[in-house]
Amino acid sequence: MARVPPTFHYETEVMARGVLRVAGVDEVGRGPLAGPVTAAAVRLDPGRIPKGLDDSKALSAPRREELYLHILEVAEVSIAHATVEEIDALNILRASHLAMERAVAALSADHALIDGNMVPRALCCGATAIVKGDALCLSIAAASIVAKVTRDRIMVDLAQQHPGYGWETNAGYPTPEHFAALQNLGVTPWHRRSFKPVHNILYQDVSVSC
Image (cartoon, rainbow, N blue to C red; front, side, top):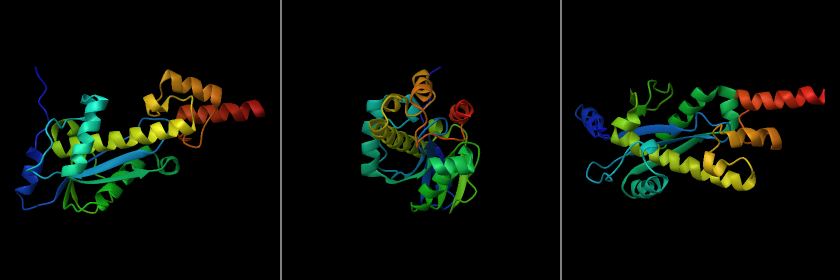
């Protein structure tokens, strides 16, 4: 059975209740061992929706880049992050919600459609959580593309500063190459120390030195 692409149904449903400014919100970067978590909020113009919007994971990197530029041209977009330090201090779930809250706060929206099964507790407007929203809802799909392209670019830049970890291709996720570099090159300031593989490397180093 062919997969059904995301639609504007959820936005239309909210707008039918008299809410005019509806934004889709998604984040990327919960799973990596390094780098920030990045969130995007996107408010689409119903008359200028880019063709081909889809869950960022269903798109090739070149297609994501094309759609990213198009989204910036025709939609209202906000991008926000939670830092590695905030991830370690708060935990990754709360930090990802913090990034979402920041993205929504910087956008003029009256209602947010959130990818996932939880609504961040400090959102500045009403919200609806949509499980697998990036594959169902056009605004969330747009947000997933913006967040993914933005974070991937950040990790490519960081890869130039810290070569050897493969961040330009693995975006900080725990690939064999990344694990090997952690063992051989050690932990960088961009690694999440609260994540077990990184913590174990640090703990191992302390044990050896003692």
